Every structure is written in structure tokens, then in C-alpha cells.
Length: 313
Length: 254
Image (cartoon, rainbow over all chains, first blue to last red):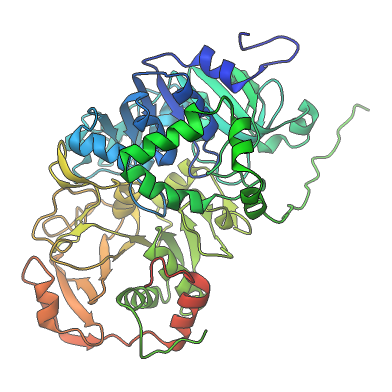
């Protein structure tokens, strides 16, 4: 099926969303700052053999190590390259340090630079100014970071260009069939990446009735207005996490290090956990239930707020 | 398990000495790894009112366990505020609300210029390091920068291979920059501060360390304060907190 409308709204499957919206050569952002990183979407892109992508993320994380090892990307736009809390992303390092098995083009910023790039892209601006990069070597290796004189005579700032991905994939806790999304916990750049992109896939833990979204409008960070496809895929972030739903699987991040160091082990991992499975449901079935017992947090509810009902008369 | 204060690791000394540097500070931008333990240790010892800020978008975190990553869910639950990353970098950091920020470093020079990007050349690096993350803007905008890092001849270098985060440049920082730059550097050997000319000097030495040892692990001629004092070893309280609560698996402290 094609995405984007009908009585079922924009709801589709991960397979169809990726098949319809990811084209070889596209600039793709799967955002989420440690939180809400949609690994299942990355795996589907690998399975479908997409090629020559420019991948954007502030922190490439293990998902981009996997995708880049699988050969889907020729370029990486980023601001911090590592396995958070553990060490290196070795598949990416092999490509950067030794062009093994192929070179990888880098376009490098700082976190504030990447945040500002998405914000410029989401705001329809030609650049964003920020106080960073003074006397750093980053502008020397990235000519798109440019020093600017303030028009008001207040010294200089640096400008970064807008980032408008062809496609952003954002995971959220809950969405309705039209793509209106509630997110809580770390917000990362989910909102900015969604507004900046030409097309957006939303992946949600729970597909809810629109009434649930309207019951708490302050929590809606992305409106369906900018969303093209909605995929209901619970636990699609593992080993990343969804606040209140499941914890970050730190053991997986630690276990990734020796796999990532050894290309043969990494290929075997991709074969076993990505190519050898058809869907994320198969991944969950293969994982079994033990990890989820460990990763499911105790409940910690917020105090409700009263929006008030304002009827006529 | 109760700690034996006679036995402690180099990293435990480094983290305890870093935590003590936070006495009297209020708003602290926390990095992952050793800084994270040091800041949480400070909050339970010398400065309980310390507000922890994390670049993932948290102000006033109250972590109930040691966060492995900078984006651990325990930093969200019970925090004062969770914001977008744009707000953390713009409204908190760039607006000048951060008193102290902790940075790590792979290489540092005498002026406190920091490299976390590459060892070797940028285009064909010997070792590709993680890069800036938020460090570049933190080094420019935080009121004071604290650096915590292991010290060897490969990390304390005459010239960094890449300036990721500017320190005191080759002397003074430009007056219009918001932040004051590197203020203190804590390693496994001692505590360093910066003179008026922006040059690092040895201010405190950890127990059992000699000036010769400091010099042997520095890639330039290290200045030594005439008022050089010895660091107190980690206290039983500091060791118990690190070993039993903050890093029970010894990821960063052993």
C-alpha cells in the first residue's frame, strides 16, 4: 500500500513505510538523543538494501554503526561519534581511519551546531547563529561553519546552515492514526528533525485514539500536519529506550563493543539479528522475555493537570 | 562493604579530588564517565545544593542510580525540568547560567586547549576520537571549565593534534567571550590551575606522587606552584559512596 491517507489515517507497516519513503541517495535522520532511537527502522533500511544514504544524527550510536557496517551509507553528518558510556563505534572508525572496506565522508559539528542546524531547517531560516567554534579547529575542517559579524556591532558569532533531511524517522511514546505525537522524557531533536524534514515517519510505542492526544495538548510535540506515515511498533527502540516503557539495555551497548571490533562477528550479528529476520516482531520473539523483565521500570506517574472545560454559555 | 581508606585507586583519588573542587558551586554541566561520578559525589558531600545539568536536556537531575550514558532515564525521573536540547544549549549555557562545566580530554596543552577529535591528522587520523559533542560550546560559554582526565605524556602534550574546545589559546582569551575557560585540571597525579598568562601550573599533588613523576608525565616543562600542597587522600565516606553507590561495578573508579 501507499502511505499518507485513507480511513486508517497514515498507519502503515515498517516495511511499507521504509519501502515507500527511503530512496537510495537520500539524506536520512533517525534522531533521538540516547532516548527513542528507532533501531527497528534502521534494521528495516538494512534489510531492504538501501544504498548511498547520507545519515544524520547528533550521536550516531550503535544503530549507525550497524547501518554503516551494512553498507547503506556513504556519508555521515554528526556531532559525537561513540558508543555512549562504553567507547568507540568500531565499524565507523574502520571506515574513517582505514577506508575499510570503503571511505566514509564526514561532515562534523558540535551538538549545539547540529541542534541549531535542525532548528534552522525547521524554522525556514538560511542559517542559525550561535556562540561556539571561536578558535576551535572545527570550522577549518568544515567550511560550512562560518564566522559572522553581528549586524548590531556586538562582536562575532558563528553560523551553521539549515539541515533539511529528505526523511526524518522519529520514535515517540504515543501517536494517533494521523500522526499527532506525545513525547516525554528526553526530547532530543525529535521535534526539530520532524519539522525540518521533507517527509516524516513516526514510529510509536502505542497507537492511541485522537482523544488521548487532545487530553494533553502540551505534550504534543509533533502534529500530524508534518507526518507522512505512522508505524505502531512497540519496543522498536531496543537497546535504546522509551521513558516509562522500558529501560536502556546497557548490557547490549557493552556487548556491542567486541562485536563491533571484529568485522566477522559484526557480519554474523547482522545475519542473525537483521537479515535473518523478517520483521521487528521476529526480533522480539528471538529476544524472548528475560530482557524485558529486567528492562521494565516501576511505575512513576506525574500529577494530573486540569486543563478546564470551557463550554458555551 | 566498608572502605579501607589506606587502599584506593588512582581513579578514586582523581574523582574525589574533582568532587572537592565543586564546593560552593551551584549550577554544574555534567559530562559522562568520571565527571558524572565526581558531580554526584560532590552533591552527597561538599555541595548538596548542586544543580546537575545534562546536555540531553535536564536541569536539576536527581539520579537514583549511576547513569551509564549521558541520556539515562534516571536523569529524567524526579528532575526539576526536562527541556529540548536547543533550550539547554541556548537558554541555560549560552545565556550564561552555567557556573561550572566538566569536560574530559584525550589531549590537553599548557593553555588548556582540548582535543577530543583525532590523534594524527584530521583527514586520515591514526585514531578517530568521538569529537566535540557539546564540549566546544561549553568551553566557550560556561563560566568556569573543570577538566578531569588521566595524565600521561600522550595526553599532556606540547601541542594538541586538533583544537576541539578552546582553552586559553596561546595566552589570554578574547574579552568578549562569555566564559572564563579552563579553571582547574584534575588528573591521577595532581590538581592544576592556570596563571594570569593562561599557563597551567601544578597546584596540588596527590599522596605518594613526586614532582619528577609529574614532569615525566607532561609533554612540556610544567610550572610548579611555590605554594604546592598535598591532596588529602580519599576519605572513608568518599570511598564508601563511590564503591557502594556511585560506581559499584568499578567501571570508572578501579
